[in-house]
Length: 465
Ligand SMILES: [Cu+2]
Image (cartoon, rainbow, N blue to C red; front, side, top):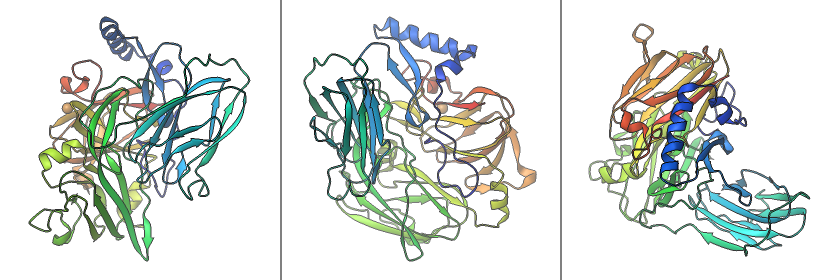
């Protein structure tokens, strides 16, 4: 799941949640109450009631309660599809929603019947086609070399009853960047593309090389609600750059924005020339230009990278992401980290008129998960412009780190609500000894709405089972 941090040396990655969150919620009065309130609000607005469901990656998503052709959601990454086997019950019309979560071009192609859906990097495109017969239909990316590299799979159309094929095959692409902000309800059943995806470095000798491209995309905040984002590799927040203390790190940034930009790595000890401050430590990277940052990753901690050019405009549009430096193996901090069973990241902010956690507003936020007795760490990053008092239901938690540095044992303190100012980071820890579905939310109550509709905004769920 996208909330879990990738590439830990020890511990388990949380499994994808497949159970219905709606069912779990049913036992919890407060959530039922807020859910009913929301359903009521939508009914008043003349919209179909939403149902809570758990989508791929554990995201809680919304779907409108009405009969419609099956919708298959596929993410094309660099270089694979997230799902190699797709299934529909029987012949008939099938809708496709294809996200390109990679940094390069991909498409989703089926030869017969002809399907070719080609979202640009960081974007999403949809199409629909009728399958007349049961069978196995290979799909692949038709870009040279991509199928050979493994970008293929199969769609199995079963022998069950399908839906009548009344609609002609059609394809529509998401708007090409840059485009003005749009709000659309055309895809209300689709889980949004996730931010915070791990980025794998390419090794150049002993140097870990990360490639970022800053470009304009349409970012889906909650299903069907899009806003223009300026994003690293098409994601809000940008990809998680995760390295070990002492690593030599090189980050190349290509500027495909309509404005000059830079990257500032906030927190680690950098040489001045790598600090990313335009006209102070470097010239701004022009439109169409690129720049390479290189530094030794030190010390270990939870950091953020973000634009430092025209910041009041660029950063709230999405130009930010997490930089995690893991402690050197064998260090005292590495020994401490080894006791965590779960390591989650919550990047807070405001975007497109919404209050977001990891790029989305409730109920499209990531679902965190822990088993009873597990030790959970959450890395909180405020990438926004407002302070947020973050409250965890069901627990007091220990504040074990501030702004990337571990607190000494005697300075660790207990909180159930922690105010986090812009760009601050807190590492918190608790033992998940109280089972249930608990919310972790901002306690400024206008921040837990989606433009006034409660509940929404800065709420995440942690499920302790
Ligand atoms: Cu808040």
